[in-house]
Image (tube, rainbow, N blue to C red; front, side, top):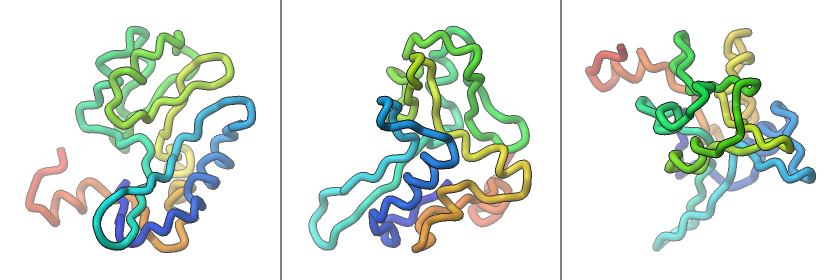
Length: 152
């Protein structure tokens, strides 16, 4: 996922689409998987829509004692197995972006890039909903060819 900070208007459509797609109950205390931040800087206002960054070497994977976080072999997205989470919060402590959230039972949930949507040929909910086109899903092979790097 990529964010064009110059296009983000902080409308919140991406966050609402994510909450809807993932049945996030914020009234029950479950944290949103995508958050909008106001970036203080000199000049015009700037905003950032942030969720899991799906790091190449995700610290949450290394910190999880139950092994419930890993990489999807097809998409390279950082995914999780909710059923095996023991609720220790090690992933949240390790994540520099604050991506892991926790459900009402204390088990970790996070952005999985709308993996099921992708597998069925659809864009992630946040990408599909963004009215300004600020959020895009980039194909790793296409990005590698643009930069001259090998995606593997």
